[in-house]
Amino acid sequence: MLANDRKIWINTQLEKKNSITLQEICDGIHASSATVRRDLEEMETNHLLKRVHGGAVSIHSDAILYERNELSSAQKKQIRMDEKDRLCKAAAALVEDGDCVFIDGGTTFIPLVNALRGKHIQIVTNSDLIRQDNDSTISIIALGGLSLSRYQMNVGPITIETMKQFSFDKAFIGCAGIDIKKDAAYTAETDSAQIKKEAMHQSIASYLLADSSKIGTRGFYQFCHLKDFDNCFIISNHQKLPKNFISVR
Image (cartoon, rainbow, N blue to C red):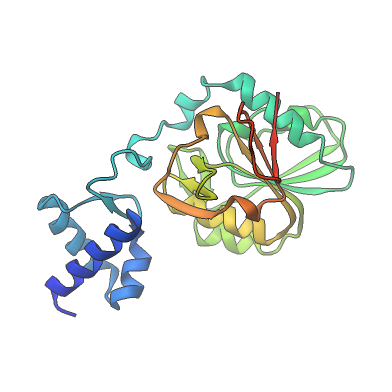
């Protein structure tokens, strides 16, 4: 495919859905990642799109949250921790002795280990924020892989291949934002999205946890539908919520 035809194809896709990953472009136009990156660089120079980690977004998508404008884990640790504590207590109530639990990356889950104290469980996580405390009943397995220092989590092929060896009873998943009307859960980049999807695939039950800042916030990449979760725990005063939503007070 000629360069001009490739760029027309990319523009058409962005007009349809506002964002696209590097892999989707490579597959769609049957080009190498190096060729696609050069095309994206030229298109960004000509103000036709915005490049982001793992792909591109429409030049008109200023409202979309992506990696460059998302807060780091260090910044998020200071925000809405009371809400995150309430979410984790609600999540912990679902966990039973003997469970193998996956805990996603992100500051939402910092209080979860403490909320699980006293339960005889195994925790598997890609997060560097999950720490073993003095509760000898909890065993934590930390997954290795490519370190995303900004988010203090591990991602990539090594992480995913290791996850495939586990069978989870429950998976607790975070997100960058949710759109209830569009039935969409988002991340701000693509690497963690693959981890979330694999964890959900390997788990009997999956639960989404989202504080009030995530409601109505669109991310760069939609990793699943909200209906894919057994329950979505949110901090919200919305009166009309989908059946699988639980508003935590």
